Image (cartoon, rainbow, N blue to C red):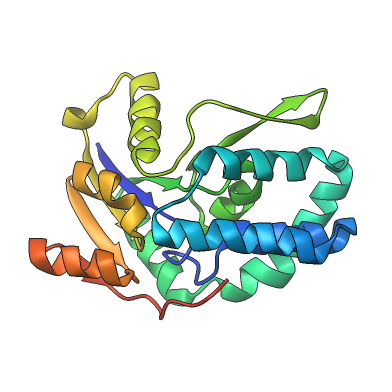
Length: 224
């Protein structure tokens, strides 16, 4: 089995989908832009600095979903896709995914952004499987909790292992390639058969050069 794994933000998309979605919900939901914006920026800065509070971030994301009816969120998500996602889907990124599909690989998105936000983005790329934080739902509405493993650093490795195990597989049974831009994805890059540093940050690019890993530039890194 051949498995192609893709990070999303700054890898397939030149934006941070989670932060962009959060700002969109703050605007559409009439929340305090200054205080919520400061929290979103703080999480982004600590992610880059390696001091990220993943549990706090997941709570923040889940609480943001739980603050509004599902119908409103679904309508806002449709706007989000049209205004902020589709305009940033690059031909080069589509071609990369399509090449793996033509080769017969199974395709999976492995991302720290939660599954509600990214599943429609995965469909936009034609990626069938989404390995992400799963918001908890009761009676069709988000509860503010989440289920299963988070997908940050070693959490991405665990998420892939759990997904493989549900299919009766393990690492030895598959050949894996993983595309990512971020030093925070080093654990999964080190675990797969073929790591490909894609639009890499400075620290990850340095490791890639040192280890002789493939490096790919689909587009220049950009702010969310």
